[in-house]
Each structure stands twice: as C-alpha cells, then as structure tokens.
Image (cartoon, rainbow, N blue to C red):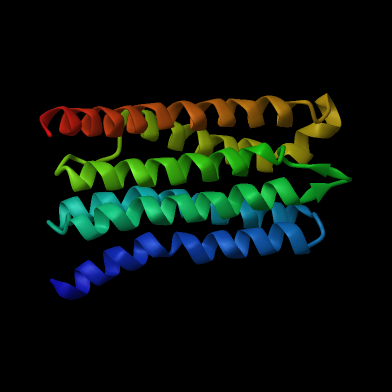
Length: 194
C-alpha cells in the first residue's frame, strides 16, 4: 500500500520536472517541428499525469489530505513554468503569450493558497472548486493552441496570441473569486461568533 501511495505522489510531482524540460527546450532550442513535437508531447504528459494521479488515488483508495495539497501545488508550479516559458520564449521575435499571463497565474495561486489556509484553519473543505477546474481546462487547452502558434501565425498573423492570453487571464482571475469569497465568508462568520 505504501509503495502505491509513493507512486501516486511521484506521478503528481512528475509534472514539475517535465515542465522544466519543456521550458528549457522551448527557450534554448532553435524552433523546429521536432522541438514543437517534443514540447507537445511533454505538455500532453503533464496534462495526462494531472488526470491520472487523482484517478489512481481514488481507484486505489489512496485519497489523502497530503495528496489533496500536493496536487494543486504540482499543478501551480508546472503551469507557471510552462506559461512563464511561453511568455519568455520567442518565435521570429514574437513571444508566444503576453507576460501578464504568468503574473496573473501567480497572483491567483497565492490568493487561492491563502484562502485554503483560512478554510483549513476553520475546518472547511479545501477541495477544488468548479471555477478552478474550468480554469485548469482553459489553461491546458490554451497551452496547446498557443504552442502551435508558429504553425498558424504565418497564415493568419500572431494576433491570436493576444486573444488566447486574455482568455486565459480572464478565466484565471475569475477562478480566484470563488475561493476568496469562501475564505472571506468563513472569516466573517467566525468574527461574528467571537
């Protein structure tokens, strides 16, 4: 049982080194279809590991508070690395996304982390909210579309990178509202009781 638990945790944490390899490849290798394919495979593996770790934990009866905390940590760090990489990497002098994307992601993740601390302190659930899941889907799908940018930019221009960047920013910023509102509500409720 312990070895299965460790395997599920390693699956969760595998997103971080894969994201680091993605970032190094995107920023330090000259663009080619081979590099694009490698980065797409890494993105796919990152997303698959995110789906499989939770599924595996539930299937094997290994759901735990430790896993519930480790999963969003691995998600946040790996996505920040991926999107920071796309904000810093260029193709023919054009950045894949605007730099506000990883900044908004970082601010959102810090706010959600503190909201979860408040909720935990008051014995409330810190489970993922629906808005957080929508945000994850938008970021995941958006990453693939953005990474493919150099393939379609020559046909339609690079304007979609701005549109996709703002879609991700809006979905990311909107997802913080549900977590922060829960934390504020709990804090106000506790203050009224005191």
